[in-house]
Amino acid sequence: MTDKNARCDAMLEEHNYSSASEDIDFPLQPSSLSAKPNGACSSSSHNNSATKEASALLISASDKAGMAGIDRERINTIMLRDSGNSTFMQRQRKMDENSNRKIEEMKQRLECKDNASTNDWRRDVKKSTIDPILQNYRIKRRPTSTFVVVDMDAFFFSCHALDRPQLNNVPACVGGTSMISTSNYVARKYGVRAAMPGYLGSTLVKELSGGKESLTFVKSDFELYKRKSSQVRAVLEEYDPNMKMYSLDEAYMDISPYLEIQLLDRQGELSHENIRKQLSDKTNSSTSQLPDKEIHEILPLSNIHDAAKNLLHSIRLKVKQTTGLTCSAGLCSNFLLAKIASDVKKPNGQHFVGPSEQEILAFINPLSIRKVNGIGRVMEKSLRGACGIETVKDLYDKRAEVYLLFKPATFQFLMRASIGYAEGKHRESNEDDGDDTEEALNRKGISHERTFSPTNSWSDMCNRLEGITLSLVQDMREKSLRPKTITLKVKLANFDILTRATTRDVALFQNCSNHRQSSQDLVDIIINLLKEAKREFENGGGAANKAKKMAVSTAKTGSPLFSVRLLGVRCSNFQLGKDTSQ
Image (tube, rainbow, N blue to C red; front, top):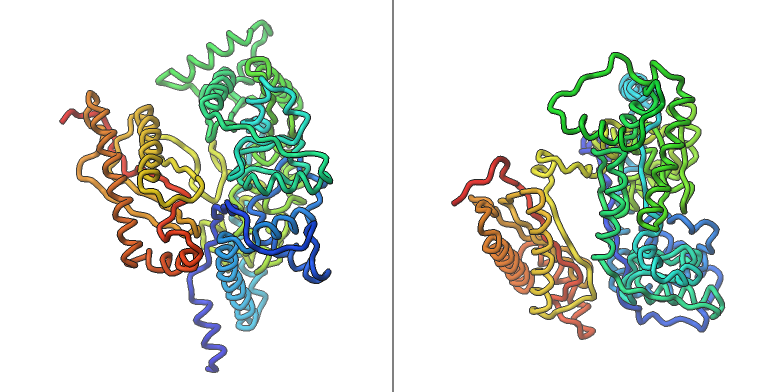
């Protein structure tokens, strides 16, 4: 056996690659990279390479609604010019080098497979393994499109615009020069979006408008957002008492129970309040009686879907009347599709996709793979680089390559996405779903984290951690959660991440009458974990050694080594069952 064949065999025996999406942070400070006036570059070739690099490294999410037709090339060049030498970009380049190496290895695995196979392995694996899986998904498709994803339009900004409507007419955003939380649709035309440093947003607006406009900043008000989100939830629960909100501005609903009551009312006299009461009674009932026939077996699909569209329009109208805020929505046969569809008619619109195979594929086939919830920047790059996959149709056509290169769970997720299928009544994602049942919470945990300008102040870190921890405590109290495992996450100024965790024999919050003491216990535990992380970093031990070496260059510029830009707290391993006093 030749050395080359040996390497191929070893490569084919390796575990398949997993390419989970990852969080990407933009740089918080401008770089010292010198640039010519007005962003001029020394040559056209330099311009082209700068644009490509900006696209590859700076764009961490697909374009938001309202960003169609923006001057992406010029925006990328400006962003790279103003942040090309930042710590973030240096970190991104290192990460991209790792991604590129993995992609090359994946391509070699494909080549080795082709060289080692005497027959058409793609055809064989499709016939024997992949296509039967896909057929099993197809026969389980829901016959009606009654799943809804409601997405509030530019939610944080819109909450402020209720009292300051003049903001709707100028480029504006919520946040500050360090970080933008969201932007309005006027600002998005200049490429300004969430998770972008405010100074970059200001530069984009100023340069792309020729100095005619400037970016207006609005200070965040999370109490306002929580209050308005609660109002939205109250409206949506009238139509689906079991709806889920995975964030302040996004809801997942199944309106089929409402439609069943409405459409099977032979007299047509049931009011919304009557239907709402019947829904509530069903939800609270300990026994549920299955209907003799499903609604699609009784009524024509066209009637059901016309009623669903009208009902969704009424829901959106009631949200607007109650809160003053507009929302957009997707109405489909599963949440994977409804999530994508909710973005199609933004702002203040809704999009329907029928449940048939033909309708689903016509909608999803032309889409960029990045439109699929759960496919992030890293996975997109892997699929493009290793397999040449750019659209959802490509994902289906290259399903044999995906089967070879990715781990089983990732492969299954990507195959479901390739035909627009999702299972169950929860949102489809390559990550953990957002279910908040006791079982799911015990598996995943609950966490809070905050990003801020890098600091090396110990008191500042402790104060921030205390605030994060107490906020998390409030959420756990509402869900009656008692954690045994506590994890601290620290993101350094150079974007490296340190974690520390501890597990207790006895869960916190056992004694309902003494939550204050348990809250302080949790704060003390977290502060001690931060001390351990700092000590480990300074001593160069364990995982902190690499982070410290990468931070040395930062230290030479005058910044302290242990400088932190994000702190997070996660609680998990919950004790289930009733409280017991100690």
